[in-house]
Length: 474
Image (cartoon, rainbow, N blue to C red; front, side, top):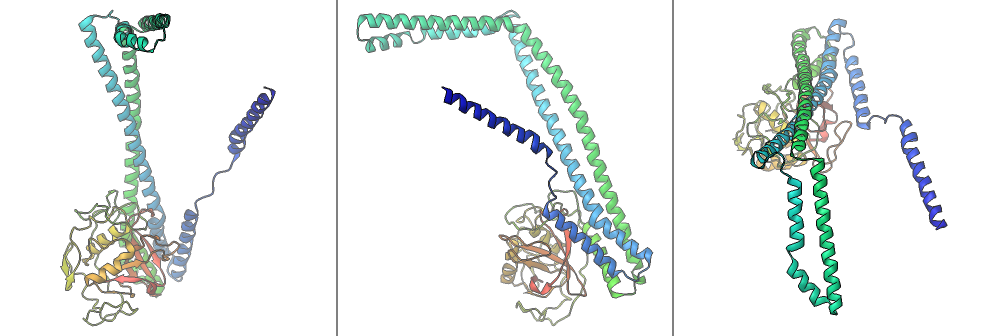
């Protein structure tokens, strides 16, 4: 006994220490460090801003500030406003769910009241429901299986006295159960009769009604806040559109190649953002929205009423022959051809496009869906079942597309499984795809891409070492 008590004391002490550690020491813990991905993204933004400023050396302060302001608007302010709008929308939806749940409970209470009022009309206000129900159970317990109980006692008794004792014992138990049931019925009857139950239901209805009204007011405020966030986001996008137009009109004042390129990149990024929308489906194709294929990449918002942008013919020319080699040169490709394939075409440029069901085979917000949407905007061929990102080059080549290692505006850029993109790697299972928006003078490419890991759908980034990747042309 003493040993048991000692162990109990030790266990109690250990439990107390655990509570102290959990409630005291852990309560003093500092906030967790930011996620490494967030820190890496921040560093990347700082580096991009510094690189942009260096390209604007010698440009007038006013024009340089216009370019830098548009870049900040597109890279920082709009994504932050987008995330804020998403959070506000989620809060509004949660508030609405609470209202619905409370209204469901209120409806159930009103039904209980209606049922009880119907019983009162039938048998009166003083009818004892509890006692009647329990009395019925007592009658069944005493009479319902009497014969079977006697037969069981007879067959299992070793003597007459044993039989009598067992019968008396069973009868006593049955009487005790019946008395207990009757006492329970009396307790229920005294604690809550029909009148009291009706009053309790009325009180519950009143409480739920007040709660539902309060939650409805909170939900309305959440909806208003979400709309305000969305309006702010749209205002920033409108500001970006105006700033981009103003920048386009002043590009002639840029005298250096690096400054013109910087302005082009910022304007292109702003143009890509203008394709964003709050529609969670993420598809410009009426048939899109299926979930057959999966790929890695970022993105959390789809394209809004995408407006086609004409492909820019950066890069070399070439003859009209069609090679399907994978070399680093673009020989065999006529860059004047792309841009004349109607959206949804099943056959274009002398081969099957593989477009059979539109974009419905690609899941919302993924890189494969964005590649389908963007190619369709640029009037370039694209298939419905090109698979995960890493599979696109092989499947496109099999359909007759030109695939090589030379980037060109509008080409689908294919990343192998685990291949480095910029500060991150393509998914080790699915790979990744993007669309080339601009080929820069230093050989890097500006790409647009989709995927659930990004703050925007589509998003964009500049990739170096462009010859290390495969490109699907037409």
